Image (spheres, one colour):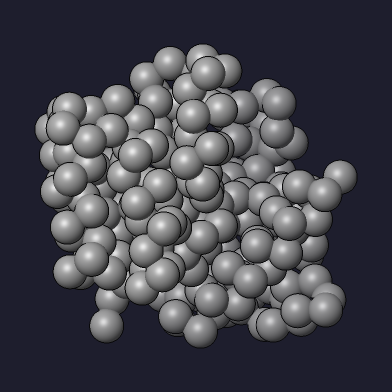
Length: 237
């Protein structure tokens, strides 16, 4: 059964924005317009995670969060959201016992990152980490080599000064660094070029961006574990 995420805001635009952020995640999205409705849904539907606006009519987010945390039958994580990052609002959220705090205007990456820390079902395909390991790819009837400069579950940037065609399909194979060591082999589309002749991002070494086309779910999960590991390592630095 899919995990449930409850989105609570008295403004429809913010609910739809948050729903859009979650569209790639294997979750059931529930919605409410105020704290009282949210509390009823929590007790009936038992969502694993709630994103809730702090300032709402009838019952505000802090009061609702406090009631959720007082209910021993619930193990719901709550992330409170406020329009302004005022210190008094932050303290109000923390005193209510929330598990996280975000500020509008919402940032997609920050929203999903906060959710990932509390719910594994949240999509991780947008996570991208810097890395460096050897990649082999087939082009022009030849097997060529480059280095992965960054990686996500959707694709990678390959450092290699070769002139490929945008939208061309290449076969790729690479091994994730130890202790992971998984061999990933997939077809990929050349999504964009950054060669010495067509530099779109001078800050990056010459290369090209790849979008994975035929990656298996097992391989995607292996990349996800590798990406998570690097993210946790960088967070500690």
